[in-house]
Length: 322
View (cartoon, rainbow, N blue to C red):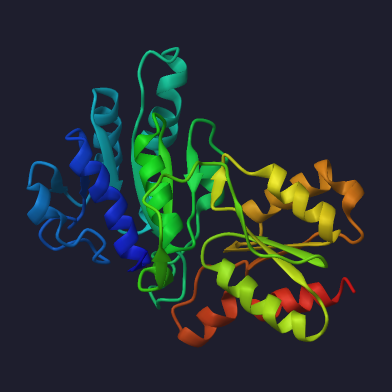
């Protein structure tokens, strides 16, 4: 067992597969000698060389297009975008090409590409560098979407993402990069398998990414008031562990869903709908859905914190159910 930061665990996962398979390559803006905008690929250029760790032009359309072509012709590319916001420039290549090609060619080609997507607010990076856009990608058939919350999950899910023969969107919350965690396994973590990070029997708090820590904070405070909350970390948004959600709701009979994304049209609404449609008979109260405010992310630190959901929002929603 060793302690790694979230960013170190992502790098470890990439490096393990690159040492094992010469067809795994990494490219993106400044991922080479500079080590990446957030330092995630530090040292990889020196280990694997300029042919396999390559800097690209400032063109997300070119980066995603290159990943599609590389994957279709036998490589296993990892494409890093500096911010998930910039994926908007490469959406045609991703949504109309990467997500469709394996299906349209009758499975005769594979599309093994990983797109790394730093996401989330809280860094003072303003509206064009702070969004959470995972709901867009979970909406597209042909894409898989993961969002780890810990170093262990970041490493294990990266191994699985690289191994997958389909496009995998790998969200990384920027505020988690420096967070340390124990890593006891170098084994892949299957997609579509969530986990219980805190057991409870009064309330299910269902979430992923950085909001796992808001949920744990809220659960500790709720426990002081006699409410024993369970925290479910989805880890994989598509495929989704619906069975785990159902098991938790069947036990607690109440659910709060929290995501950092803007609440309107967010993935939290999909989770809430699944609970309402498939697990309604277990519920003793309506599902509470929490997300960010319906506005671009503010630059002002005070307004940015006001914009983001937090543990107090969970506590307020939970107490309305009891």
